[in-house]
Image (cartoon, rainbow, N blue to C red):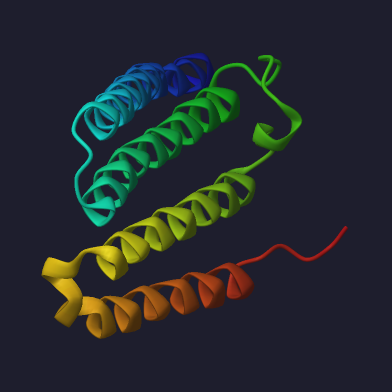
Length: 153
């Protein structure tokens, strides 16, 4: 029975790989979008604010891809193979490490979305509500991270 239960950890393989594939798709799509915006900006110079919003939208996709990549690597490293070669900053020792990495990336995404709203003249009236919402989310994540942190060893 222990052997069977031990093998169930491999059930995480499919979601981990799916997260990594999704991450790669978003990163490629965001990169293609940035190249298209750059070409459009050079060939048909338009309002700089439109270009900024389009670039920030593409960066948002890339950052979301980063979240999926961190989740995929983290799940794989935690459940299947702790010896995979990843950068030191991406090492995941336990779920708390994964949580803190995800919170950092989510805060970056919130900042990018807020800046996109801030420079988008069509949504100028939404700046305060987005700012309050983004600030509340970041404060909530900080409180969550502080309240659930591990005691230093």
